[in-house]
Image (cartoon, rainbow, N blue to C red):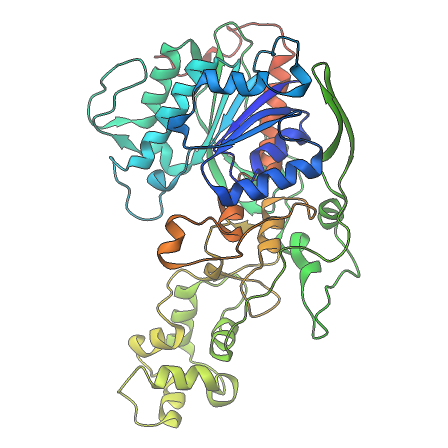
Amino acid sequence: MPYAIDLFCGAGGMSEGLIQAGYHILFSSDISEDVERTYTHRHEQLGLHQGQNTYFHRADISQLNGDFIFQSIHSLEIFQGHEIPEIDAIFGGPPCQGFSLAGRRKKNDPRNMLFREYIRVISEVQPKYVVMENVEGFLFTKLDNFIGVTGINYPDDTLVTELLANELNAIGYRVLTPRLLDASNYGVPQKRRRAIFIAFRHDQAPPQYPEVNENQEIVTVQDAISDLIIDNAHTINNDSLTNYQVRSNLGRTPRILNANRHGIEFGDPIAHRGPIQNHDLSRHSEAVIQRFSLYREGENTSTVLNRILNNGLENVLFNYPDLLIECFNKQDEYNDLVSLADALEDGSAGEDIVKKFLSKKGNRLRYNRNQPAPTVVTLPDDFIVPFENRIPTVRELARLQSFDDSFEFRGKRTTGGVRRRVEVPQYTQVGNAVPPLLSKAIGLKIKEALNTENNTDTLENEFIIV
C-alpha cells in the first residue's frame, strides 16, 4: 500500500482519485480555510481521521518544510512507537492562474513561484515519485529572475518546463517528458486538457503515463447529468439512470475501515443517501431566462450573435418580452418596442443592438448533451445546461468532474467582487479540482512502477535529458 502526500490539495479531487487507486494519504495541505472544511469533512466520511491516520495542515506552502511534514506524520496514532514510513509519492498542483492560457500571462506573476516552493518541499521530503498537475499554459510559460532551490540563477525567458527538469534533476530525480492528458480519455465527462509532470528518484523504477484505452467509452453531458433535471414539481428525474449516474450514486471511493502502519483495509464506497447535495438552483430573472433560451445546444455567444444577424428571430414580442424591454432601455436608435422587435425579427438590427440584446458576456456556451463538457471553470455563468434555461448547479459541475454524489462541498455556494480574492466558494472548489478519475489513472501508473523492479534504462526516450 503506497503512502502519499497531497499538496495544494484543494477540495480533494486528487486525493479522491488516489484513494480510489489504493493510496493512503498521510499528509495534505492547502492555504484556504474554505477548502479545508470540504476536504476534512470528506476524509472524515471516508475514515481518514485527523491525528489518527492522516494529517491536514492549513498553510501557505512557503511555511511548510520537510521536518514539519515528518513530525506531523510521526505524531499520527497509527505510527506511535514505530518508525514512520518512506513517502512513496508527492502529488500537487500549484495554483494555475499565472500559467493560464485564458487572459494575459505575466512572467513575474508571484503565483508562478509557488512551484518553486513545491520543488523545495520535494527536496526536503525526497519521495520516491513526484507528480505535478497544471494547465496547458504551464508548458509555454517563461520566467525571469528565477533562482532555483539549488541556488542556480537561470537566464531570463527560461521555459518553466526546463526549470522544473533542471531543478528536479539537481536534487536526484529524473523527469519524464511532460504530457497533455485529456480527462475525457479516462472516463471523465469533460474535455479537460492538463499538463502532467512525473519524476522519479534515481533509485526507483521509471513510471509511465496512463495510456489511452481505445475501448474507453466517452461519457457525455447527458450521461453525466440528465437525471438532475428539475421538472415543474421540483423533483429530480431518475427514471432511467445511465451507468455513469449509477456509479456516481453508489460511489467510486471506498470507505477506509481500518488504517494502521501495516496498511489499509478498504470497505465499500459511500453510497449517496437522501436529498442530493449541492444542487441548489440559481434564481434567474425572466430576462436572463429569455436570454439563455436564445442559445441552442453547442452554441456560444459568437454563434448566436451571427445567427441573429443573419436570420433574425421569431416572435420577439411574445418570446422575449423582458429581454426586449431591457435591450430597449440600453439603446436610443429605436423609438418604440415594436420597431425594435421588428428589426430583431427581420435581421436588420445592427451588431451593436444585438450585442445589447445578448448582454456583454462574450464567452457563454450551452452544453451539447451528446458530447463531453468543455473544461469546468470556477464561474458557472459561463455555461448553460442543455435541458433547461439556467446555469449548472455545483452538483452538476461536480458530476462533470467525476466526483461521487456523496462528496459534499462546504462553505458558500458562490461569491463575487473583492471577496473572490480570499474566499473559495463551492463553485470555485469544483472548478479548481483535479478530476478524481484522472487522478486515479495517474495514481495507478505510479503504483504500478512502485511494484516494478528498478530498470532505469527501459524508457530512456521518455526523459528530458538535462
